[in-house]
Length: 129
Image (spheres, rainbow, N blue to C red):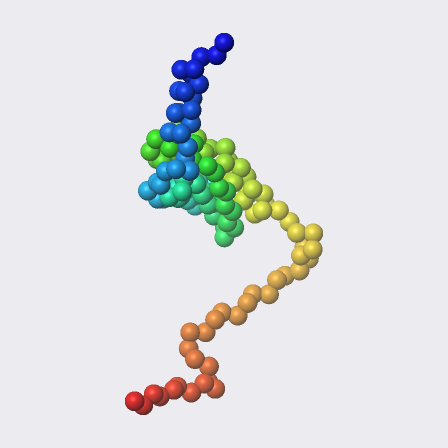
């Protein structure tokens, strides 16, 4: 025999906790971790995007919202996304400390900066109305 009350309760809880039905207020939290910049963004659809930039190397991960009724800063302070953040920091550090098999003995040329002044061969246009 099954308990109809617990079956109905689980159905109601599932409907209440379905994150796809809610619209969240977007939030952004920025931190400095391990000499890099960590940005955690809560999107309005409940998706959490985590960006990590260190020495001009950027990586991003996306996670689902863990607890929709908890404040986003509270989720971060309790470490609910720490596993994603640790993986992200490790991957960026791996890229920074890695070496290329192909560009090992080459010095890559620096690109020329873009000029803000117009080139000499261009002439200004005049509009007469």
